Amino acid sequence: MKLPIHLNALKAFEASARHQSFSAAAEELNVTPAAVGQLVRTLEEWLETPLFHRANSGKIRLLPTETAERALPEIRAGFDKLSQGLELLQQSPTCGILTVTVSPAFAAKWLLPRLDRFQTLCPETDVRLDTNLKPIDFVIQRVDIGVRYGTGNWQGLVAEKLMEEEVFPVCSPQLLAQADSLIKPEQLLAQTLIHDLSMDEHSGFPTWSAWLDKAGVAEHQSAHNIQINNSAAVLQTAIDGGGIALARSVMVKDDLSAGRLVRLFPTIQFDSPLAYFVVYKPESIDIAKVQVFRDWLHEEVAK
Image: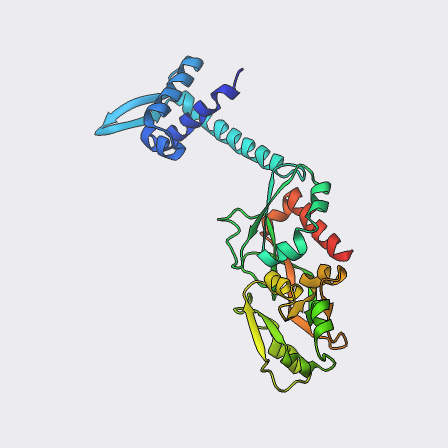
């Protein structure tokens, strides 16, 4: 039987039987009523049997024939099986698109420099990054997995801790060489301090005031201030010699290793109360490509 060529006709027939109307079926299938009617007639001609009694009681109402009624449960079960099969195909770790949500700064400073290693692991998976500072709806935006910064509580999502971090001042080697004196924390106040405003709405997000308190500095007013609402831009401004940034260890790791930035006052430890979490819908963990990406993230952190 050449069944595949009649799948659209079967869909039209099933929808018409369920709605008892070509017009309602057409609306569901996003085609014209004439197209639905033609598909049903094509199926009837191929089967050489009518599928509907055309009844008219004020408005046309389609009533499936007895033969059609007997076949409908099997047809619907078949569509369910087809849907399950397509989902299984999409679950291959080397097939399809993986939509990942992260902040712009996390993408620029941590994820993108490492992403080629995931692409080597899953060369047939296309990663689509959704970079947004605001939390998005995983269902509406069809997001598979993400990394979020916070306390680990996001409604409707599983949150697995990925990385904790420390906060500390950094500056460029050139600025450090030019500075008159940066021996004591209070001497930072004579410099331009760069403030990260990107997470202001999050209670507990580390600030210069909190770090200076930790360092035992009573006065918090610096000579000059720059305020930026993007963590990557904060670090780039520091790299360019524009001032001293309060860096997050996860974001600044590669810049420190490359010598683009220098950590100041390493004996003062200030652990952030916030952390990075891998987040996903509970049902998504059964999708192989989501499992692979989650495991890869944890492996990258462990290196």
